[in-house]
Amino acid sequence: GLGDVYTRQAYTKLSEGRADILWTTLKAGVQQPAYETQTMVSMMISHIRVPLHSEGLSPESVRDDVLPKLAPGDILLTRRDGYLTNTFLPGHWGHAAMYLGSADEIRALGDAPGLDEALKTYNGKDKDGFPFAAIEAIGEGVRFSSAGYAMNANSLAVLRPNVSAEQKQTAIIRAIGLRGTPYDFSFDLGSQDKIICTELVYRAYAPHLDVPFEEVMGRKTLKPDGMLQELSPAAASPRTGFVLYGKAVDGKFESATLEALMTTVE
Image (cartoon, rainbow, N blue to C red; front, side, top):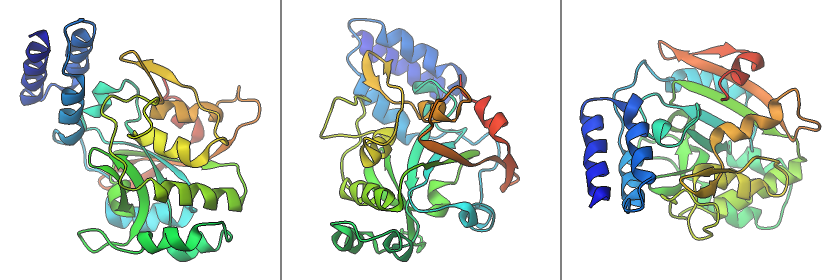
């Protein structure tokens, strides 16, 4: 059917390295009533990575240049130039995650109900031996990640919710409780048993974030770009603040201004 035709065309664009026009191909398919392979195509591109346009942020630069400025509960926005989700979900920023920090840092925020139980599952390291420091929803579902993995990107922005320490701790406990939830390849916020990257952050902090919901492929969703809305000068009482923004230059984090960050939002 037409769904198979558009899927084959998407693979053709992928094999040609034409990530820049993949979105046009997929969007044309979505507009066809017979397009029935959206979930399969979404799954395909969520796991496929074309060569990076430039070197991403190195683990050493994350450790030395970024981590000293972070605090548990911070929101991470990343753009990996080689990921095809950048073309499937329109907007500059392709992914959102939550920085957790160490178990001791999380404990220092307070003593919210469920803290001890949550931290029992959080202690551990990734397959490369690096300690967990973040949580994110990716194609494999909600999982813990090391700082180097979560922030290995070409561009990185960090936001800090304007909430109390206790509310941050509660948000972290909620996020940890979502570990193992399957990824929602239809990008539908109305689905409660599956989740997308921005939804993980939103659910953790609800009702403390004021973010815009948008329609993508006929479904209500939250794009990573939308999380920057409260940083606009027009925001009356922003619920998130600016921590940092920058790009990877030869693997090292090169800091930029809030004004430069806001130019990335369409």
